[in-house]
Image (cartoon, rainbow, N blue to C red; front, side, top):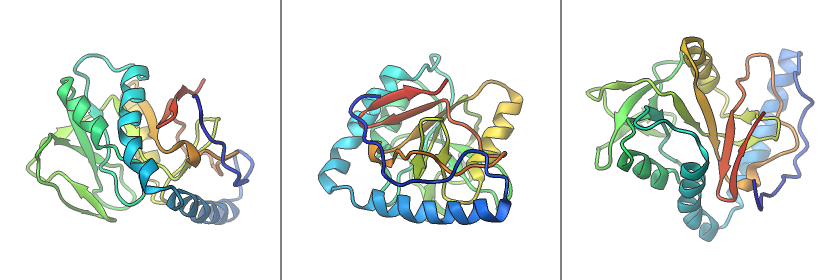
Length: 210
């Protein structure tokens, strides 16, 4: 990745085995990451979506017409809408995540430009239940922080870890984190069930994790 910014938040060492301690470290790390993302200027956010789109389309290997899933940005998340529109224009089946209930993997319902979204809980907007399900082979993933080992800090529900584990059990799936470059940290607190990303894409560039 080029022109990225390494965060100054120091988090835990890899593979934390103390469940209670790991949970507390993640709570603290989420608060720090949300505060850091909230300091980004409006001008930087406005320009980031198009740059994110261009880097993702140039770098991520996506077979022609393959099903992909994205997410509808909320709050201070990087703007994913330019990427979603470009993926649809290129002929990909695009799905957005839907929470079934706590403890279960996400499912993905088909999205297209102009589709009216409905409330999906947790502040999300999702396609309605009439939309067909999409089974993605490329999953674009939201996050609060990421590190150069390929691990992400999510929002605490474990939905994407369960979802990626279930999808990967059925075949190859590419997991791609989408974030601002400033969301990079030295090390993300993680446990045995945390799923690793294959790529990270920011407004500054894209990087694959080996």
